[in-house]
Amino acid sequence: MAITPRLALLVLAAGILVTGCGEPTGYRKEVRTNAKARVNAASAQLSYDQARQAFEVGSFDQARRDVEVAIARMPEVPEYHTLQGRIFLESHRLEPAARSFEAAIERDAEYAPAHYYLAIVNQRWSDDEAALVEYRAAFTHDATNVQYLLACAETLVTLDRLDEAESIIAEQLTYFEHNAALHHLLGQIALLQGRATEAVERLREARMLDPDNLDLLEEVARAQYSAGQYAACHDSIMRLNTLLPATRDDLRFLEARCLALLGRSVEARTLYLALTNTLAGDPALWSELGMLSWDLGDYRRVAQCGARLVNLAPERYEGYLLQGLNEQNKGNAAAATRLFNKAVERAPDSALPNIILGQSFEGLGNLHAARAAYADAVAVEPDNLAARELLDRANRMVATGIEE
Image (cartoon, rainbow, N blue to C red):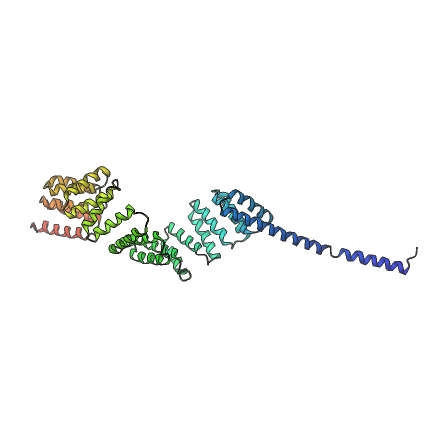
């Protein structure tokens, strides 16, 4: 059959129609794919939000189920893996927690929270070096987060790299100058390095930035004591006592020490005696009360403290020293010397028993033994000025054979 022009036109039109209908097929697939991706993303985000809410209220099982749905729908989102890791971390499942944080880092190596929480896992495993690497990475990728900086510095302190810890804080202090925690940590580092006066200033700055923090006020007081600022320490303790809900024995003990060192010996003794009712088993309390009583000439109390100390802590030197001082006061020089020798045997790091033993030997007229005791005191504490002066005097007396 011949194809008429009309038929040809119809065939051509049909071809055009067929071709026209086929061309949009790829486009529609792309539209459908994009729409499906948007639905998946929205659904994953909804599951993630639900997981986060459950996590925040402690419903870890529900949170885990919800975040697994989010990950299944959108596995490339690092936030989802990080939340999953946090859920495992709170459930004390460290291995899966680490895997989740590592998965987040694989998807985005610059995602700071994943590095931060992976560092926490490493610390739980007592691997502080590995933790430091991750904390550094977290701060490198988000230098606005002071918590990451603090974590770095605290880990360096744990590793006893104090200079480095102080340095990284100092480099950033301009940006975080109003952060109390940074000044607090600088104060703690200064204390650890024996710079007590500087520690006081750092801790006071921290307290000015966080005035309601009573723990900071207590740290200021203890730093003031370490710095020899006994009056300021006493003032801080008095302030604490007005703010705390109840009086604490450890602060009363510190107050007694301040009073003693400020020369307010009678007040200090009264406070020490009160503390014997609540801290009767503390050897340090009886030792300090005994030495203060010796200074006050209260030998009845010296004897009591010595006996209590020998009973409580026979390995310590103070009880024998106090008993020896009491015997010396009673005129029993030989008995006193025996007790002082017992004290020396138990005090390899203290010059005081050797000094008192030397003085006891002097009282017995044995200058050579006294000189040996003073020499031992200097050997134990080379910077002890009193021991050096006593040794020099004993050397002169032995050399000249003349008592001074």
